[in-house]
Image (tube, rainbow over all chains, first blue to last red; front, side):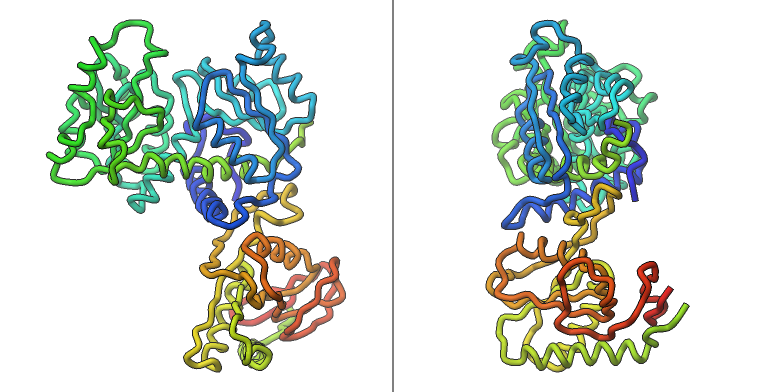
Length: 311
Length: 167
């Protein structure tokens, strides 16, 4: 079986079969990561560039580790320390890197659509590591992997995505993926942070009430308030946000069930998630990070096949 | 289509291999058996079941090994991996690798690479049902063979409806 696409630009372009293939392959890579030698020779002849035009800790380390565990050669690019700060265009930068015989490009960019643009202009396989407020497909995949690992399934699960939906690429990738795999999704947050037509456009439930949403769901994926992407005042203060939409121990203890708590990181402790929730047994936040490496290995492995055919 | 082993002959070959393994390792404590996905894992389960009857109360350790990530032709085609399951240590043990057909030897070479990423076995032996001896591309030979057959390079040996056939 093969993926129906040669790039991973977004979950939007994947079929349910693609998603199942990536998740089942990731299970095998998770086994690799438990071995004494946590490495396989699969991508020995492949060179990968990690182009990060935006800050990242988890995603960048996770991709880099995934590449190393597959025996690929890697080079890292951070826009702050590169010629991009001298005014070089994205396409020029990438073409210069590709002329050094690079096979795959992992890109994070603050402009939505940057990976799609590259895919139209260069022959290498492109993997989107987050583009603006569009998608973060590997996060969607690792979240799905973690939900499946914890609850045993995706289909029929009730998943709430809570917080800054408007500015979140994690939310969009999660919604596309969960809907394709037959889960039910509710987005919850203040009206100013929920896109107006999201319910009809993406087929999700909308709620402004955190307690009701938590009563409904099996899994709560809690998002960070993205102050860096907000150019107007969308709620009065972080304190007020915490009171209305922050998840506290007291709130969870008042429910008649145990909801699985997820967060893509970085956490603003005391804003969207209180510390005693983030660090509790209910939370699978660190498992998400662990699974991220296996899921990214699966994506890189499955997309590495048609290497340099068009070069 | 030519039948190489009828269902009856296949069962006999499995019993004979089990008997040979029993004889060879009767006095060894630390022996583990590992079937190579997919054909070898199915065959391995049958051999180990027959062997378990001979061993009686001594519990046999049996795992399955997948070579997908270690194939030397991986760039030609990306294949979906099978399950890898080695729920025991192979450190300083005798490992008996089991495969259905020994052909070029490339699968076994990859399987040895996988094994060494799990530890350092004292010894590795190879047990195969069918040996297509004249087509080897690596210096690899089996220690226990069910049946050696002559084939042409383009022939395919498959298990179909409980019989081993030449296509």
